[in-house]
Image 1: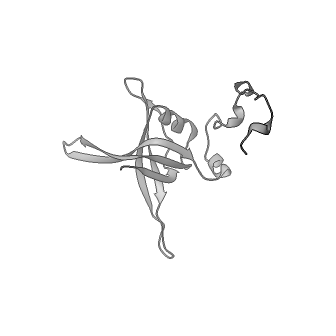
Image 2: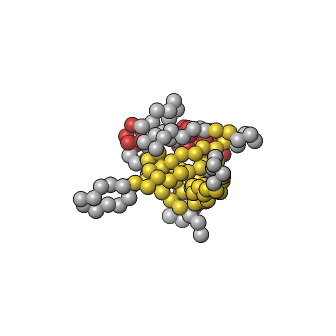
Image 3: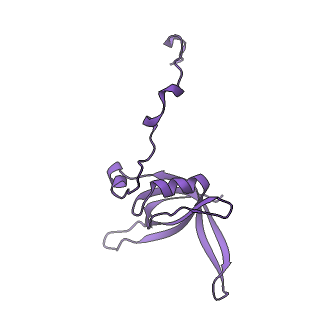
Length: 140
């Protein structure tokens, strides 16, 4: 089983890019605070993350540097040759889901995007149909 869930702060603004096949992708880093005991300095781990398609578009549109984010995905390794021809391995989280977290004021403080996040209050009332009959048939 390869599942990972982290919650931390974005270290930079995610930028949306497109592959030659027009697939959306964004790469970003999340700083996650470690637990610490009294008297010790607070430490953080930095996780490199990659999101694709709709998830990449969502993250790049609604998240900004310093904002809290919760990430679900899987840890994957990638091998490559560096400029000097040395073989390297990069570890990154392949993001399957991203979630808002933290307080509303906290998220709004670092939020510098043109649009507000989507909400259910924007739903069109025409999408719903009134049910006929009373509440007598309900099991509760």
